[in-house]
Image (cartoon, rainbow, N blue to C red; front, side, top):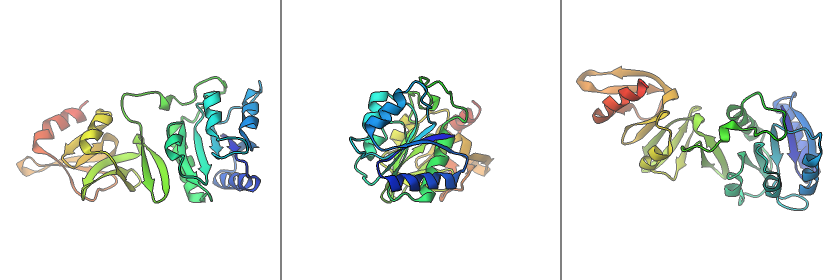
Length: 252
């Protein structure tokens, strides 16, 4: 795996490189670049090695890092590393994997790289003009949700969602690793945004992912209980008026 660090603070760039190698010593840092112009010059070289992943500060020596992405039309995924949180919304309109606030925490960095690995295929084309991320092709359905965890904004891929729930007047996104985040969407709206082949609304307060289902149990009086992983805080039951549609959905 090859990464490029775009950071104008020398000590910060060195620390970031050390954290990356702490995560995986085999990761190759192609270069550490301090400005927009030097980054543009790097990619302008005929023999420039294209990174698999870019770590980018936003405030660089001569301009904002967004200019690099805009001028080069890069489709290389980016993990932003910055001391400023006001650019998060703009960042997530790019090929952003995560948005880490300085000082960079090792655990958060590890989670961001893990996320990159789940989204991007392991074998990447070497052709510098190739589009690297088939996963990011425009789709009719939502592929990622931006959530808030404390002061940190992060992007959650739909593949990481086990189920959505409505609890205590709040819509929650529940991940496959047992975490949950509030969302500014109603379940009605989510049903419109999600791929119906992957998600099904089993009742008024739960929308579940197909890959989270472990078993389906039929009970007396027609009750149907779905066991999903991770185990939800509230039992998942299929509404009586949705059972037929649910069975059809499972059989697709």
